[in-house]
Length: 200
Image (tube, rainbow, N blue to C red; front, side, top):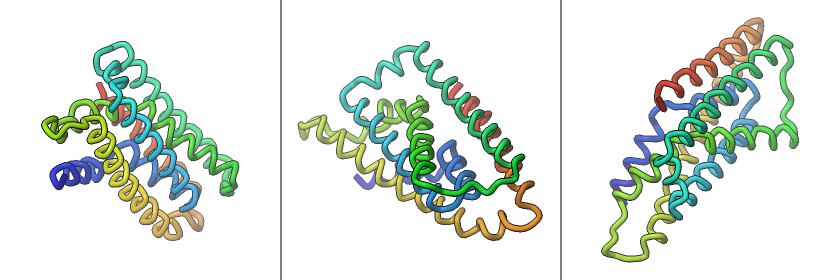
């Protein structure tokens, strides 16, 4: 259990699409918006974990075509988020956070993870190494580890959002706000490129 917790912690502390997206969207729209994305990310990780536990996610690992389809869908979605941020920055509008906006941002987090084949690979290739088949109840062990991983990931993601929210007044106010929004859009585009490289 300690080994799995440490593995999950190290994995989630490594910069990636989730961390970059959460930081960028929080700086752009605020803490509440970032936490809405965190909730979507958590559900996405839980869904993929459950699919892996029941063996369905193995299809992704065994089907190069399906893996590539998910991979490119994820890349294009990240590029769309970058374009959306660039367009909003060009309008110079500070996007108000509303309940409708919360639903949209929740779906962003959910979609980002459902289109991330690396999450499925983690659940298929890494998580099973921490299961003790001799104890029996393999499915129950699998689901418990999925829940632990999602909890660790969610705690770290929430921490990223809270840190970005603390920095937001320093970075997103004044004459440089529009420039900063453009820079965040560029960061989102770079995350898409990084994702494409890491999942190749």
